[in-house]
Image (cartoon, rainbow, N blue to C red; front, side, top):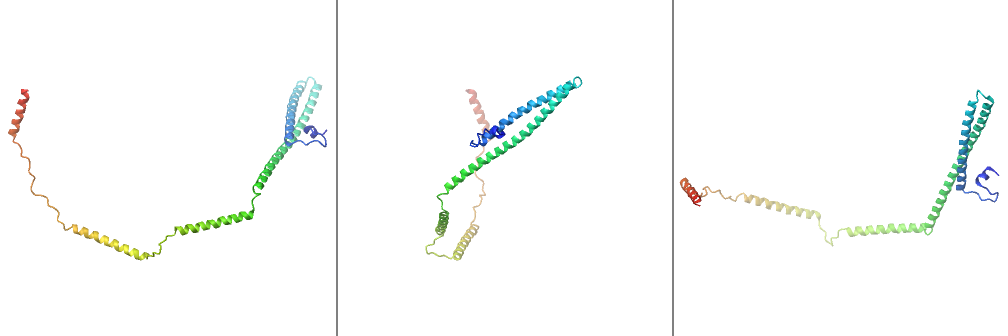
Length: 222
């Protein structure tokens, strides 16, 4: 069985193709497995390096064997790095394809809805309707203009004559006011009286003193 058959579980020629979501999930699981393998190989490389350093002078044969194993692990690690890059690229391509599929599906759904909305619409009928609406708007505007136009019921006046008459009335009113002001200047104003007003006679000082003494005696008697 091919690698893709192992990854996606193909059931042969008549087998059902996996969905993009299933394939993406399988690729993610493979990435996790290879990442764990990377961690294992990195630890083995560190261990073999320690062994080589430890036996470098004491046991050269053991040191050489450790270095050989280290080289094999490093080669496997490089292969896994390349495989991860390929799987990551394939997963991203599948995710983009899945996104595009969903976008196209939704766009197709929207197109069907728009087609259903326009199914009972006739472009000629729409044009006729818009023309009728425009015509009725023009009629309504004409009616508004006629209604708002001033109506004199047969009375036609000359604006210049009316303005001249108004000016004459204003001039007459102005002349009348001036005459009234001039007439008030000849009326004599009342004169201020020259004689002084009668004043209350002042009491003599002796009489005031006697009254004060009488009040004092009366208070003392009580």
